[in-house]
Each structure stands twice: as structure tokens, then as C-alpha cells.
Image (cartoon, rainbow, N blue to C red):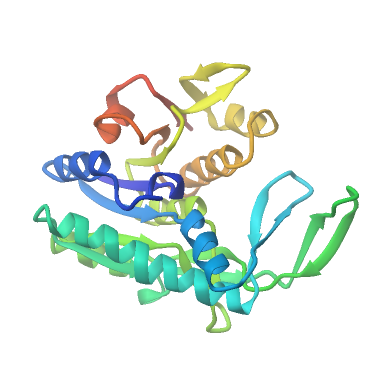
Length: 268
């Protein structure tokens, strides 16, 4: 079966984690995998080192995101595609995996529409409109390149940078990128690995949720997890069979996501 795995940036601060790499290699014995990665922490760190202070904004729905101007999208692409993607490819190649690093704009795999205006909540709690910069909303995911690689037993490693409808490169959310890719591939499962063991509400791990229950939970979880839940729902709505949010900082994290306890399963 085809499984799309999203590895969150919080798990990649020190490079590709050995526990994820080993379990990923093991799963390749039976399944075809596509890995989509994050890396926001490293983008922020690199930008600050280059003297480009990063700005984060909050939408009226409470979703926090990076404000991406022209200089920031260039740094974002450099770090995501040039550094993090390459490190993951090298780590898997060292284990004998035929990994291929691509970005969303290779083969028009991810096409996004540039957001002309953003409505955000300012420091006084007021809604204000600002220029959209180089943040994109994914409008199409193409499976042709991914399927070609999978059919030849290559393993695609995808950086979340999209091709804009006007030919520009755009910053897109890694979780939403994974959802779009899982949908276009009709993946059996979409696994979101993060630094917590699933969706926790009022101190309790929610082991299983319907799509509707997942939507209703958005205001009960914090920054970061809300995006993962939204993406998990989108993956199913786009055509994937099932989404799983699970811990990536434990032994055998992918095996756990399929069979273990530290996970939340979201089903249609």
C-alpha cells in the first residue's frame, strides 16, 4: 500500500532522527512510502543568522503562520530544499534506500495560488488586512512524477515549496502539502509524526476521531496541532483512506502509528 509520512520540523532540529530513519527503512520492505518534511525551526534559525528577522501572524481562526516576504521565501526554499531535504536523502541513501529529493515545484507536483491579502489579528486584537507576500494555498497536487518514482522503486522525499500559478515559488504548510499529496495518490494512510503522542484534549489522549469530531476539536488544541488536525481531515477529503497523528520521538514511531498506543486515528 501507499503511505504518506509527514515528519514535523520539531523532530528534525538535529538532523534526520535515527529512530525514524530505521523504522522508515523497515516499512519499505512491504509498503511504498512518500516522505514530506517540515523544518520551520531551521528556517527561522538560518534567517536570523542572515539578519532577516522572522514575523509570525495569527489568523482570525487562531492559526499561527510565518509571514513570507520575497527574501524570506528565498531563505525558506534554500533551507527546505537545499539543506533539510538533502540531509534526509543522504540519511536514507546510507541505509540503501533509493531516495530522491524533490520539491513541490518539481514536475508541478504542488501548485499553489499566491494569497494576495491576508486577514490577521493584530496586537490589539483587531482584524486587519495585509499584503499576502509569498505564502500559497495549494490548489492542485499532481501525482505523475511521484507515481513514476514509486513505480521504479524510488522513494520521493518532498520539500513543502510549491509552484505558484504565476510561476513563482511559494511557501506552503508542510502538513497541508502532505495532505494534498496523500489525496492525489489515494494513499491508504497519511501519518503525521510530531513531538506528542496524538491529539490531547483536557489531558486525555483521543485515540480515534471521525472527520466531524476532528473539526470540532480545533479550538480545543494549541498552535501546531490545529494545523495537523486540519491537514489530517483534508487528506481524507482529498481521497486518502485514513489519517494518523502520532509520536515521532519514540522507538519505532511508524510501526507505533499503525499498531501502537501513542496515536490518534482519524477516519471518514
